[in-house]
Length: 165
Image (cartoon, rainbow, N blue to C red; front, side, top):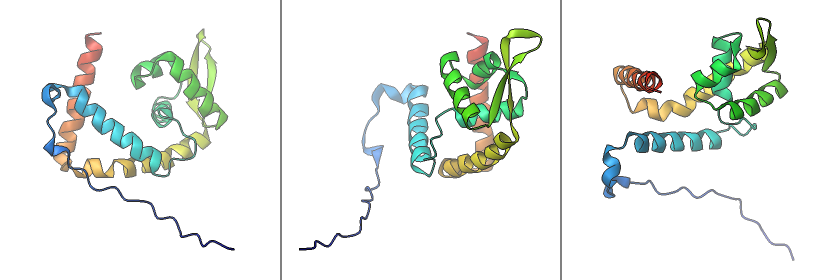
């Protein structure tokens, strides 16, 4: 006896309206709002065709290496907001993909200089397009001017945090 298998149709979740819930003291907590946005965008990043094994932080790391050829691993960790240990794993993966290389700094053999390969530059172009696509809904919530103000405000907050640490 043969059983007919119906094609799989994913269940579309009902739209969520969280406005009916109070967030209590979280109303005044900046990190709560930032975390919700980050978590949502990370999930859409993972679900949206980023299934090629790319780990969180690899796009950021590659972008910073391309923008700063020869940057040290220590400076990259600071600028990218990574701890040293996680950056080592990210760099291992970028080297396996042949997107970036580590080399000893001739001026200080204890430091590694990081550079992107031609394949890394090409990969970054693709990753950048995918990142912007992932952010399309978030960016669409703001006007062009609001987005500029928001990005400047985030940078201002970050600079203040660095200055006081």
